[in-house]
Length: 390
Image 1 (cartoon, rainbow, N blue to C red):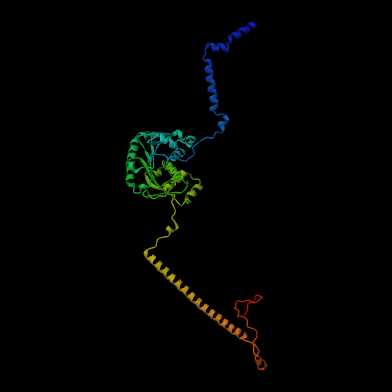
Image 2: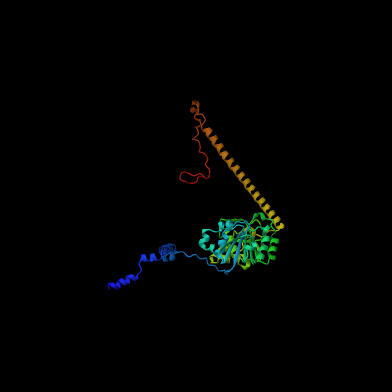
């Protein structure tokens, strides 16, 4: 029995014998131990995975553009003012790639790589490119030109056509382009063979969102400020709506939101709102003063004459009333003065000096008058019982 156990023990190599055979074994064991510890730290537990929030894009009712690539440029060569359009394109569309094309990839990354881009998943489809437009647009099918510069827009359109761009959305937002020749720009876009949309807005504002919008002629340069988020959402939806193809217009804020509220109460989506706006179904109602039909010159002259005659008649009536009132006041004042005069005479008679002794012996002497009479009372005076005195 002891012999068998000794045989078994001799068959099992000791730890010392293994280390003596291969000196690398301790190092390998240490590396495996560190790898296991790191995996345990970095890998979340099953319970943590259950409670982790899932990031998903919002649902939309539009046709997906999966497989499409969109290129975004900014005429200011900085995405500081238009960086939110990338998030809008990611949240409400389904592009395989959203490329930021500028002269500096480093500066573009500073503007676009943010915490929201990481958490939402935008960073997974966001690409960067610098250099020529034809190289940066290669492989893309859609082009969004934010804050486009009209003086270089013709060259950009030619480069986009050469790169194979099929859909172009051009946004103008500069007050200095008040005298812009939009007809020539529209002709250039039509000649490119691309499906285009030319949008013009006023100054983009950081304040306010979700307000009513209206479409005006593209030649109107005095459009008021419009919420930046509303413009970016409109561009995102109109980019894939056929109702926006081959059109030029200005996007301005609207003061009438009655129809928009009705659509939202009915549960319509933002895409349906943009579609209705492009179809002309959402219109700003006329103001009350604009709803009144204009009169002809003859009708205006007659109306002015009637108003003048009416004012003269009212003036005469006022003068007649004032005259009658003045006569009544004079009569009343005359009666009051006569009553006061009579009262003064009676009081003067009463307060005369008393008669002399000779006058007292005279049997025919007159007795002094009685007490002075009371002041005359007006018809509206009342006695102590509240009754009117005659």
